[in-house]
Length: 79
Figure 1 (cartoon, rainbow, N blue to C red):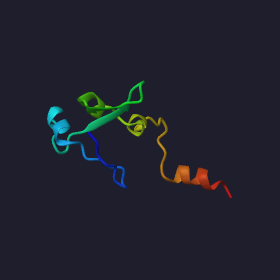
Figure 2 (figure 1 turned 120 degrees about the horizontal axis):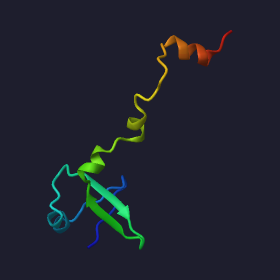
Figure 3 (figure 1 turned 45 degrees about the vertical axis):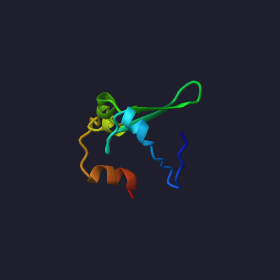
């Protein structure tokens, strides 16, 4: 079954595929490419959606309590 890629990189998933996978509007999806080069589509699991981003993982890790003036002075230098 063929579909067309839009200029924005979007495609419409054919209805029979949406029905077979029980996809509803707003369903989060994951795309992967297997060893044979085939694109595989999965519903995003709860574990994947709860995984923090790399920025989320770094949030709150700083051990130095800096005031705004401290990093600004460091960046500007002592003139």
